[in-house]
Image (cartoon, rainbow, N blue to C red):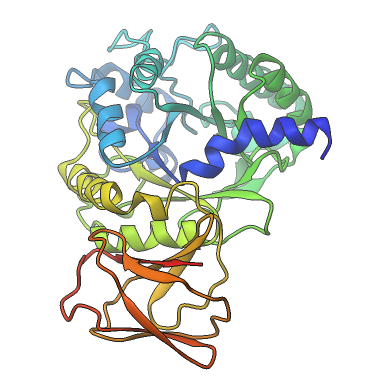
Length: 397
């Protein structure tokens, strides 16, 4: 292994071990309560849309409460939208007046977030959208109007530099918005359209330990499947970003939240594939996280306090668990996630390895087993499910 490879392993180790993070979509669009794409979806004129900033004054916002909520949920890092596609910045920028500092709230909300993360020893992530819907280039693209596109790129590079120089050490840079809009359709852009190679060289010079996602047109450190769980090839880091309801930004009418059990299943599926789950919350315009989200996060945190060993610092597993659910792999064991409790007997097919012992992780109760060819039969299990959300059984090798 070369020096660069060793440095990458050291730089990315925490991310590989974390498995669970919080995504936060929040901005002036929260005022309208119809999601973060409302400007585009409702074709709101720029001047009209920018008035939202006059009403975005989150009196109940407490970054410390947000980060403590993430910590209680068992999350190891947080990624916040410093700027979404509408161009509104939650930080002070010399490139824009459309910021939380220069409008109603008069606050650098990113700084408050960073300070709270540092206080709680939480890894810090910045989401940044490359595109800005308020600018003509966002609809004309790099070919039709290269001069306007150049201005957009200069602002993008300038603001990313601000984020990388004003807040100390940052752990994750999460790009998005690699597109322009033509005839109401999003047209993907290329890395060269954003001068992404030069952009990311600057970022790595300013933040040597940072981890960068794949949405600037370059592969960089990790993949980002959205609203689905698809593991990248072995050796490649990945993170599935998902919503709890049907929207990223606050949507007042959307109360159709996934049950906690389903969210746990998604977390275990990510761990099975050696990836992370970045689970989203969309705070209200006053700065509070919806109670439906908080309730689920607390329930996930309680489950992780008993079963976190099966998630954090584990490896991907190709073990066939039959009807049980899925599995992750530890240093000398398998963790079997039993999504649907079978009763007193569970058969694990095609398990050739010798198993020394088995027990239920949350209770420590020993599990009896026997061999039937390549099948491992777990027997005399409790009739009643030990944990409704998902029971974890450890198989010691």
